Length: 392
Image (cartoon, rainbow, N blue to C red; front, side, top):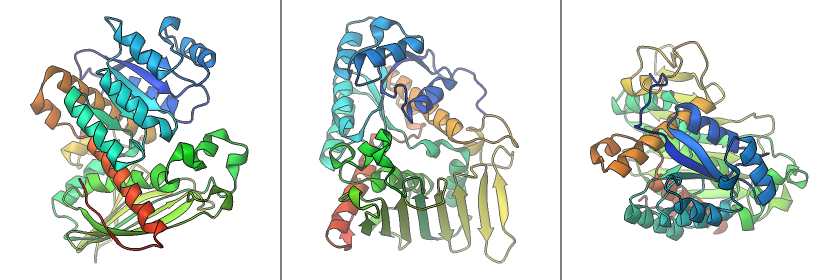
């Protein structure tokens, strides 16, 4: 159980690029990173408007001199300080991720980045090489992957409780963009603008989340080929899609689907992972995150509750408040940030054994997200055809 005891020798000196006042995701990053005192927020470049960003940083309690106008000034200014930052989180529009992450790594700074990591596999592989050369980690915020019941699902699959895996049914399909909300909402507008969002909207924005969770639960399986069809039901969003269905064949013969959507009218969030085996199935839904459904063929369905002593030790290790009380997004993100901090410290101290014991969405997970989106777009734009897919 996580109970607030320090898990690193000292807090990682940390900054943010983006995530300023009005940011949808900035507070989640700060709440998660600061929860276990593994990070200390000491600097930032929070806004495209330097004065607005500086004012926000001051309101967070930062030294005004460490509230910078942009990421270049942040990295240069902090490099000149003996107590400069050791890590940065990137919470900016997609088109900036690659340049900011690259600059941070070149300055010897660990990176936590929103997904997608970048736009192309070539860019992603450049970040892999740079992170290795500079001995710095890159974490990607697939936030719900830090939930303890994802660990439980992984352990149950590994123990053979489902039998041979046959079907992987994934979705992240909400309804909040069923209309052209981007006409009045800037936070949505950039997500449906190719210059800022990249080659896709919902595939990269929501589809990669359950995809990564499936990779955590099913580490032994690899996608062999896929087919994708995508649509722009709000026509002004074309060529970017607001709905997509991806079919996947795995190397063990299993079959998978991913439904990525922002136009599932009436759905609040709609992120679900269902794994079907020859003997039993598991299902987890982020709107009811404290329960994992376990359904054995021929037996009554049962509900596995988070926080219970019957859980696998890996799941119990991520528990924060015991059974009964609900846990969700903030706890899952905090678990990921705790892992990021441990990985950063282990990298800084050259502790390879400790580093290898920590699993988190790393630069390679970021690459696979980019690779999957790239392949889906290629398949859809060719008319929805099967294409070969190679995981890294």
